[in-house]
Length: 510
Image (cartoon, rainbow, N blue to C red; front, side):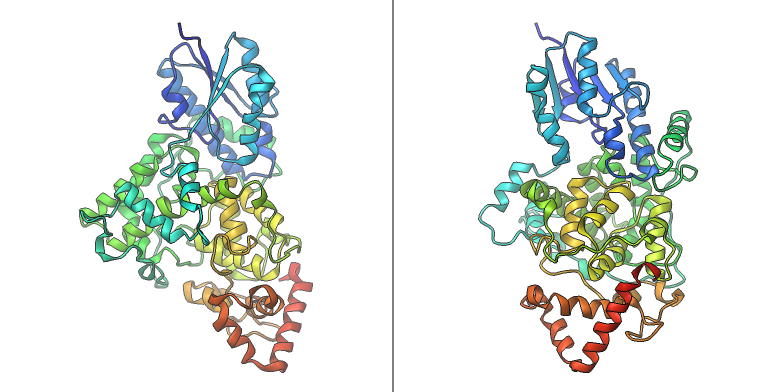
């Protein structure tokens, strides 16, 4: 006779295809808990807490409708500071002899799970999270004996592994693996974004909004404009809306930025996928089908699929390969405190104001705003790696450490010294001017590097190269940049150093 199990479902595992749920029987007890520590270990944006708490409550309701026995611990109703406290509470209510859980996304929390067997004196089965295409062990095997862990080669493996956009000869359709060069167009100034699908709040979400407003008042964001999906059904509708209405233009303009158009043609569905409300294989199949049916160009379909089975799976694999040491990397010794405008967006730098204000309003910014605006500024200014990574983890709805840390510490800040990226993604104001219309609306002049109205990105860019010449000077991909720096001559170099010093002294007033 099989004894009932305690099946623990974490807040980002809201998927009916979850490995632990596939084992569920009607007499098992499914545990879900709104845990104080997980909501507060950084000051998570209100939208993120609302999304997860509401989605958890909706998911628990579906499980109950399906006949499962659910123990749901709502925030404040039972004192559970950690998921371990929640398990302890549940075990006291019933004579369960075994615990089952699917491996979690964050190293910190996984260590907590590994302590349960000794703590509770019961067998604990931690199942592989096969919602991902590449398992942790598969990535480790791919990484073995490689001198460089470049995403492009991993992506090709994933294409062949899934069969997505692959022909009968196991070659990429269209004759090339990557159409990224076609996906870097700046938006025409008269183009208008196609907003993502928004949803009315039901009674469950309204109750969660009130709870968050009362208990997380000092966290960023506001509850009033929360309109995200909180069920799998609505998340699928949101993604199909993207495929039907936005994907065709996403390819060309995925790197573009326009004033007061925070979404352009992006899906914003990473927040749903990372919480478990969407399935990565289903998403990719819908995008591939749109290309096969002639509804979108290949560069749009390939560009989106690359973000999912290439980049997303790659950063997860790298995270688990390099943790726990990875979090302590600070290759460029960046220690400057985070300026206050990262929390209120009141800065004269229009690009920063746009990226930060939409982040604080919607808990969302697309990858170029994160990498080449806020991330680029943090890199150039030498902002504290811990401050910056904590900020990214706090403010974005889709941020969990497994995906946020490699993207921020490795890609944006080059703090891992090149494990993830082959060069720092450092750029002057010219890049932002090329990819956006932000500079046309700015207090500063993007064409100037010196003087009162000079764009801060310009002098900071040259100073970044200069002060890091010992560590970066031999980087093959920076040789042209260093050649241009040397061509400026001693007098201009010194002027740029002094301008950068002035900017950094007054960084809070920019």
